[in-house]
Length: 377
Image (tube, rainbow, N blue to C red):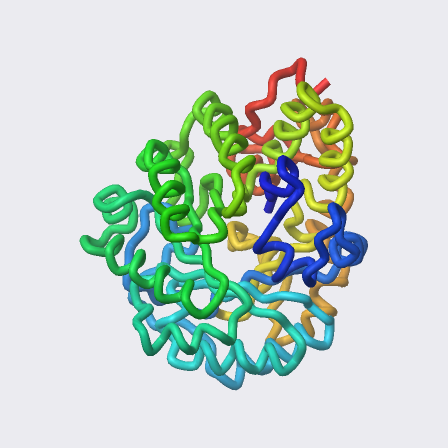
């Protein structure tokens, strides 16, 4: 995750609270500690059930009941706590379909692990909103305004219910919007940001599409559109009141640095220093995924590669073991080829490896990198 607001304006309102322990310095001490360890943030898909059918769902979630018991989930939390994992992002499917989701998150809290929630928001009503206090942050997925969102998410009326859910959640807990950009909703990005500002939503997080599950390369925007999108997002990041973030394309950080360098070299160097701690693809390093059956993966888009099962071995044993892919991801600059291999910024960026893998070469160029040959040299 790259906070454009942090790089551009030096302020990351939501990240400061849930990630940096309230530290407002440009490079917080907690970030330095996190970047120097292999204790990952864990995205945990606690269910494969979902009440929507989104075209981009990496989990291919559906109405099938496929999830672990409450006691098995407690066992997983114990394993994560023993390894001192700092944060769990509960996802799905739709995690709020689990009646025990608040119990599991509460158990994680007792074990010293912060929890955040990724939800489609359609199930949040006034009563449920009160239970959301167990989470540090709630991200509600909205992929456009009105009918754009409903077409994207496969259910008529989803937008209205999700936006109401977001507003109710924001009354009791830090909340924000999660937006996955595609060729179907590209034009709605800034309308949704404007709407969020009107309602004082403190974070807008834009996810670049990753071909996985039901999502394919044909659904994505062009790199020309991606570059124009970043230009406009950087202008939004200059404004107060909302943290603008992007996810799953580490080239965004380098592009931001290069744009800053044109205007303020000192500020640019500070941004570059920050990116040494917070830039790049953390998959298999400081980002892990556990699916609805307890299988561990390098990230949530990589379910075709399993490192182990946390019900059979401890998370620490799996994560710190001898898995060949994890070892290579942790020293990936040795293996990078093509555009990523010759890039001056490969130590900080390195492309998004699973996207390159889906394109045909795990260590080749990330096809969503929009930087020119001159820029990467």
